[in-house]
Amino acid sequence: MFSILRTTLFVLFVFAWTYLNGQNSEKMEFFIEAGSAKGINDVYSYNFQFSPGYKLTENFTLGVGIGFVNYNNRTDLKNKLIDNHYFQTGWHNAWKPYIHGKYSISSNHRVNPFIKVDIGYAFFSHKKKLSYVDENENDYVTIPFDIKGGGNSTVSLGILKHSNHFGKALTVSVFYLFQPVTYKYMSNSERKNISSIGFNVGVIF
Image 1 (cartoon, rainbow, N blue to C red):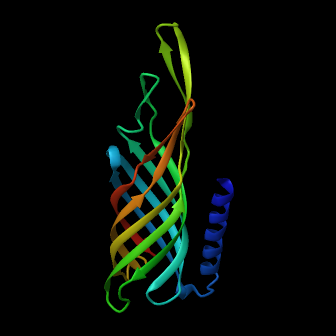
Image 2 (cartoon, rainbow, N blue to C red):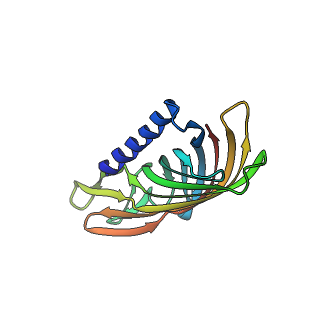
Image 3 (cartoon, rainbow, N blue to C red):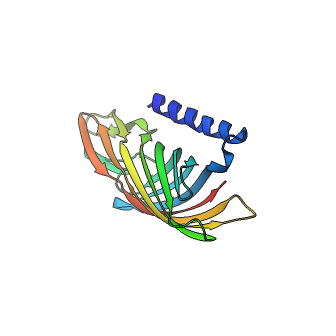
């Protein structure tokens, strides 16, 4: 996990250093997005992501990124039935390094539609011990609980409006995120799908 995150952060640093030193800065862009989504089993999420890229052509940009997602799992994860007890397993955060490609339908207009595809991996920062009182034994029972992420992909469709006041452009988009996860508790391993549909607003520098 940490090697992938370190590699992603290093690549982001190289992009930033190249941009600040003016090396092909006209071909560099920094895409910042934030938004929310609603998914399967009423899994709500809020996200923030930063993805620098290099313009290979006037219309196509390729780059890497890092995203942070905060999941509010109201039913599926938060109230997970284990050993005949319901547990409040709380909020779940995930870091998502990814590569991305963005294609603008046209580069000659002030407002341009675009499509963006991200492919990455989610690391969930969630590992805890759940406890309850066993009334029969009159004692505390502790159960380890963990969430493992996995590969994910996102397809976004949006509109880009060139700006002369704040950054190079402002964006608004809708997206579909495919995200499987694995719940691990006791000796059980259960695969789930928490894919979602949402919207983002962003700015390109």
